Amino acid sequence: MARLEDLSETMAGHLRDLDCGPPGETPVASGPALDQRRAALISTAGLTRRGDRPFGMGAVDYRVVPTDAADDLVITHLSTNFDRTGFQQDMNVMFPLQRLQQMANAGEIGSVAEFHYTFMGASDPATMKESADQIAGLLKQDKVDAVLLVPV
Amino acid sequence: MLAHYFEAAGLPTVCISLVRLHSEKIKSPRTLWVPFELGRPLGAPGDATFQHRVLTQALGLLERSDVPILKDFPEDAPVSSSAEEEGWACPINLPAPPRPFDADADVLDEIEFLQSWHDLAVQKRGRTATGSAQLTIEETVRFVAAWARGEHPESPVEGMSIVDQLRLCSEDLRAFYAEAATAQPGKNGLEADSSEIANWFWSETRGGNLLLTLAETCRQSDDNMITALGNFLLVPYDQNHRESLK
Image (tube, rainbow over all chains, first blue to last red; front, side):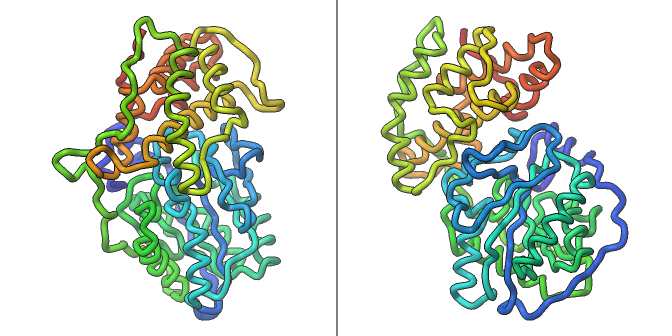
């Protein structure tokens, strides 16, 4: 469905022309075997906890989602052009935290982080470096060594 | 691009990607491209086994250091009812919209009609995605209806801009209807896909009509932010061809 040829021409054209910036050199970090790792989610779906500040136009900041509050999320993303009905029926299709917990319970990954983070992906990620650096520090405090980035 | 920042800070990352072209350009360390629709990066709501397969493939890339890696997930999302001949039929029979359309009263009637279905959805799922605008659904309707009529009440939530208040009210109204409509399978026992729910909301409900009216009113505004709201932030591209009932 997200194959460009399956989308309307307006949407496909928008995605095709989006400036992704210069790729630069790809950095690489390493860690232990998967079943020893601690995983955190980073979502760009503009998810916020109910009652938390909504993401606004041009937002480059982030919101914190504690693992135990993840079933009370709402979408405050600017774009109306992605499906919400999947999330409304099952949050895991957008924010797969319960699936990660099941993988930890089954010993497929080591554990699930205490905190996860969300951005609003309509903003230019080139302007999110400061927020990402802050989150990197927080993830390290939480002993995370597996970061799963999930788009919408 | 976020992956570059985390990886450079020493944190191993893996990205799920919905738009392969972007991932080809960005060259994040490890990426699993999935052929799913925008908004469903794990592919299938309510299908834990399918979601688990996506996660297993994605997280499995974490142990690799021969970056950049861009791998394709080999399965499409399970097909929903649009692949069937008949398609989804909303289980709820809404009364036809009256003429002339009276935004407040008519949408509030419809909300009352849908409330028990919405209650059922919340009970079944243990959660709701409504409430982003921090208003009750009735307050949401009244606020949107006032703006759709050309009135300009202030945002009832302290510190929330009018643009954010209106677009989040729109988000909540759509969520309320979609949650109610999917509380049970369709009349013919089929589950709805996203486009069927969207087409139902925007063409057959008074709530959808209210948002179309709001967008039309906002487009006439002298305030550029409100005009942009009407043009881009209330109605999806794919539904923008519709006109409101008068």
